[in-house]
Image (tube, rainbow, N blue to C red; front, side, top):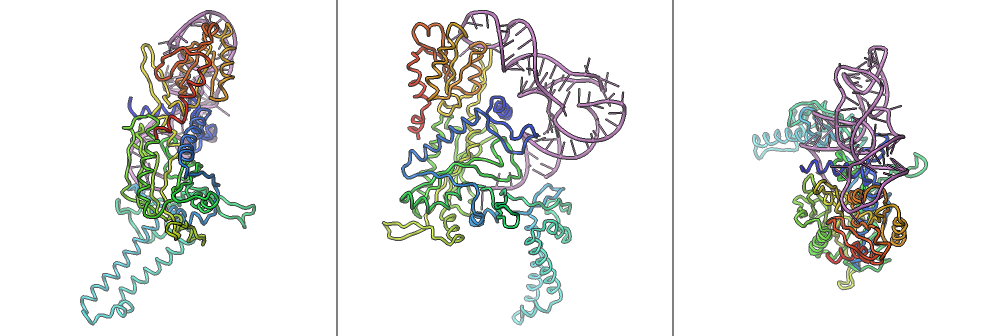
Length: 511
RNA sequence: GCGGGAGUAGCUCAGUCGAUAGAGCAUUAGCCUUCCAAGCUAAGGGUCGCGGGUUUGAAUCCCGUCUCCCGCUCCA
C-alpha cells in the first residue's frame, strides 16, 4: 500500500473509532485544530504518563511544574518571540515568492547607499590624497540628491514600521518601484502581518487592558520559575524541571493532520547544568530520549537523529529525534543545548539575579540549559502511524492497531460467548472486579469474531471470553490482539497476567 | 499565501439530459447461538459543506465562501 494511502486511511480510522475529530466540525471545522475523542484522550493521557513518569519518577533530580498559559508580556520580549515573529510579509503574484516587506525596503535603502558610496569612491580616486570625504558628501549634487532620497525613504519607512501601517509599507514598495528579483515584476499582494503568537486582552476595560499572549512554547514558564523551584525544592545542579502543557502558534501553513496544529501540547524538560558541562549532558539526554522512543518497540530502524547545521541564536547544539512517518522522516522531539541565553535574558529584562550558587566553586553563575521538547500530538500520531496495520487473513483482512499494551486506551474487553446461560453475568462480574485496575469494555452484540475485530480496530490488547466451560471451572480464554492466539486461564489469574503486560515498569526497564 | 484536487448517511462511494436522495459496510432492536467479519427480520440516520444566483424546478449549471488532501512556500 502506498504510504500516502496509508496516511489517509489512518486519518479516517482516527475519526471512525473515536480517536481524533476535527474541531467544530458541525460548523465546517476550524483550520488546523483538532479534538481528541473517547479513545484518543485515553491514548494521549497514557503517552503523557509514560513521559512524565520516565522523567520525574526515574530521575530524582527532575521535578515537575504546571505553569499558567498566560504570562507577563515582557517574557516574550525577553525570549525573542515578540521581535522574531512579527514580520510584515508580501507576496509577488507572478513568481509566487514571499518576502518580508521590511527587508525589501531595507534592500532598497542599501541600494541608494551603494550609489552614494560609489560616487564617493570615484571621487576619492580622482582627487587622490587631497580628497576631503566630508566636504564632498556635503557639497556634491548627486550625492546630496541621493542622500535626500535616502533620508526621505528612511523616515517614511521608520514611521510606517512604528505605526504598524501595512498599507503604507506596501505603498512604499509600489512608489519605490521595487521589483521581485525572481520574476522582475511589481505585481504585489497586500502586506500582511504574520504574528505567530495569539494575543488577547487581560483586564475588564479596554483602556486599562494588558495585551497578553497565549504562550507559543511552555519552556518560558519553566525558566521564569527556575528560582522558585531551585530554592523551595533545595535543588542542586544539575537538575531538571519538567512540564506538560498546551502551547499556541498561529502557523501560516498548518497541515498534515495533527502533525502541525495551531493549538498543541508539549512535554518539555529543561535541565540546568554547570556551564561547560552542557555538551556532555546534551549527549546523555540524547541517548536517554532515544531509548525512551525505542522502548516502545516500533523498530529501531524507524528512528534517527537529525543534527541541526544551522542553529537557533540561543543554541550551541541541537538535534531532532525523527520518526519514519507515512509522509517521511519527521521530527518528533527536539533536544537543544540552549546555553544560558534564556536565563540571562530574563535577568536582563526582569532585573532579578537568576543565578546558582555553587558551593564547590564558592561562586555563583547563570546555569546552562539542555532542553528536551516533545510534541504530545506528534507522539500520538507517531504511535498510531506505527500501530496501524491491515492484515490479510485466510478469508478476510483485519484492521488492527498494534498499540503497545501499556499505552492502549482500552486494556481488555470481556465477552460472553453467547448472551444466555448466565455467561453475561459472569462477564459483568469479571469487569466489576478488574475495572479498578484497567479500562475495560463489555460487548455481547454480534458474533464473537466480529467482536474481536471491533476490539482490534481500537487497539485493545486483550479479549477475555466467557464460555460454557467457565461455568464448570471458573476458567476463561484470553485472546491476544497481535497473535490472535488464545489460552485458557483461571479468572483469578487475569489481574496479574494483564497487569504485568500493561505495566510501565517493563518499559522503564528498557530506558 | 499560490497552484491543483475534493466535499452526498458514522465510513467508502454511486447519482444519467436539471425533475420524489441511493448502495455496501456500520449503528439500534429482535431472532439465531457459533471462538475470529460478511445468517435472518425490522428500524433509525441526509437542509447533498455553507451562502447566493439562473430556472417552473438545482446534489447536478454559475458566482462567492469554508474545510480537507497534494505540491510549492514557510518553519526558533
